[in-house]
Image (cartoon, rainbow, N blue to C red):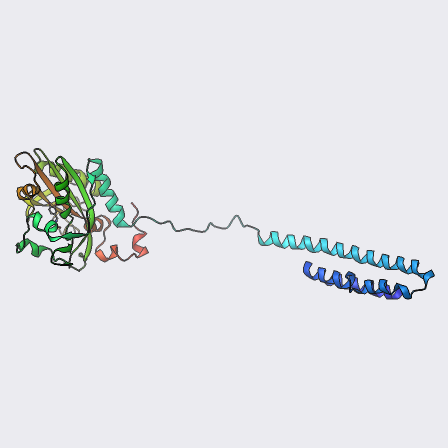
Amino acid sequence: MKEKLQKIRENAIAQIESSDGLAKLNEVRTTILGKKGELTAVLKGMKEVAPEDRPKVGQWVNETREAIENCLEEKKTKLEAEALRLKYESEKIDVTMPAEKHLTGNLHPMTQVKNQLVDIFGSMGFEVYEGTEIETDHYNFTALNTPQDHPARDMQDTFYLSPEYLLRTQTSAGQIHVMENKKPPIKIISPGKVFRSDDDATHSPMFSQMEGLVVDKGINLCDLKGILDVFVKKIFGENTVTRLRPSYFPFTEPSVEVDVSCFQCGGKGCKLCKGTGWIEVLGAGIVNTKVLEGCGIDTNEYSGFAFGIGIERIAMLKYGINNIKLLFESDLRVLEQIDD
Ligand code: DAH
């Protein structure tokens, strides 16, 4: 019997020693000490042992059990320590590693320019009026002194939704809504999308404009020039100035085309300004009295100026972009470079 127990003990210790994990060790514990374990079998067989030998055999069994339990406990402590060491090892942080780079987003160049325009004119007291992209022929054309068959309609290729409704071709349509709903003094800007059937390197069927309208007593072209000078200095640099050239728009009289002195060459002439020293930036003028009267504004008392800025054009000039499509393609290589 003593030999048998010795065998069980040696066998158990060998199994314990070779256990390579806590789960395996638990398995070993059950096979040896569990209900169906070898040691339990010996205890169960005690009835066959002669009564006078039972205390002695009992003591051997207990010693064997104790030795195995001690061994199990020791191994458990070792395996736990090892598991902890491996855990710490795997969680070790190398503080000398360079930090992971995270991309930071920024606003789209068009949004940046629009926000800048709104800030500049907002600081001069202009309120923002947001018009609608779907307009009637009346607001987009007729009320702006461009009735049916007016040759100026050919200047803008229009997407009609029905004979009456269209996608607005110009934010100027908003002028009429404002003047119909508000008495002078009026001082608004109206940024938004406009649509024309037009598509090349500098034109897109959908683009953005920002309209400006001031109506008050005694408004003249000098007021317009003063405001636009502030605008170009803030957008293109302190050293830039504006120049007004005669032009034609049905809703303004007189009408002007506004140039900014070239911010790249300072007016000497370069590729950007095509050697002229000037860059065309927007259309403007004194609001045609027919337009004011159509909105019920007394032209003996009030006059106004209006202007229309192409926002893509400003963004392209400001950031040196030569194809309008780059502003609509969401190419990160382009967008990442523009963060004002
Ligand atoms: N609506 C014109 C266009 O889209 C731009 C424009 C010119 C607007 C003169 C104005 C203006 O308010 O006075 O071509």
